[in-house]
Image (cartoon, rainbow over all chains, first blue to last red; front, side, top):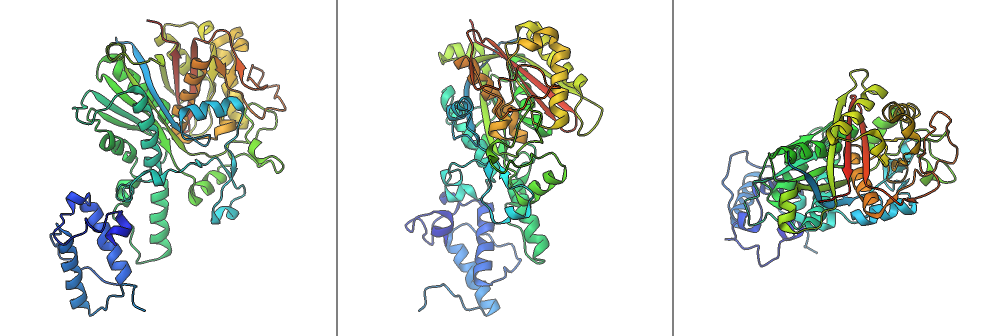
Length: 78
Length: 411
């Protein structure tokens, strides 16, 4: 989704990639979390979570998925 | 006081994506008015508008677009062209000696309307987190600073249809006084949305569509005029003090010499010839010019019944018998009414006229109105042997009148 929505390259989107270095500032990060919520029917915890890297986003999604018992439909299953 | 010159101009308009295309389109009498291609247009009494047809959004990376309403995109493109022509580049420099003076009537109208629509039609929906920073009136101003690293003072002006003329006038004042050395000045507008167009329709000021030739529906100073056509776009000028321009050895496009700004204090929409005339006189006085020195006027000329008669009266009051000898152009017939951007766009038109010694036409004036009895250049673009001093009028709802005078540059 980072590649599709923000025009980043797959090489840029690595777990340790810092979002600010990719040009993804705090506003863009919130925008992206909203996109994730809408796409996967998740609800953010409401707790302020420091999100600095791509991996931080993935971890936040994992927490939401575990808490909310949601199965991710990533759109590539047959 | 310092002399203030123009060293760059840019315009993204319904007539093209550059200032040169705009000026050429005007002189050829090409109309940017057409039926808007959008699903909701059938809900309006008239489908007509003057949209920017060239690619705008695709000129920005996806990440950048997250915080750019269409008005900011148009504003950035016009500024890019003006800065490129001026040769100024503040990236890597301090940029603190350059100011930003930007006008807009409605700011990020597309973003605001989208947020309202989603919130009101779908309770529980949330606007995008970037909504505020995209629709706020100073969004384009801030984005121009960010994009081009301009770090001096910045100002956002909103006085309806005179917004960007005021912006240019205030930039002129700031450079003239030495407050800033350079200025990016102009304005942007992007309000061709369902709600905004519907609101304008209610105000009864939009032109009745001509069914056979819709592109001719706006007819300033004509007997059968019925109003204006909403348009969108942006225009930017780079102003700088003469010493700076000479030191940089860059081409000087023109010199700004006069700016008048008055308030009617009469009615929120009805124009007042007295207020308009005082603005023209103030600009003449500041420039140290006599009425007989003005050789061309780009009129506000919206094509409304009252507005065109009032402006004709105001010009007569200020210029007396000389009024009959001034070629007056109302270019909104072709590019539409760009609201907060229109003053800047029309400054590009007069600077183009000055450069080429050709004044653009007042198009679609097939039936002259006896009450509008001056020389409106109805026959088409007119080449002049001498054209050295030009005036541009911009009058806004709220009763604000802004008038600018430019001269051919002579050291």
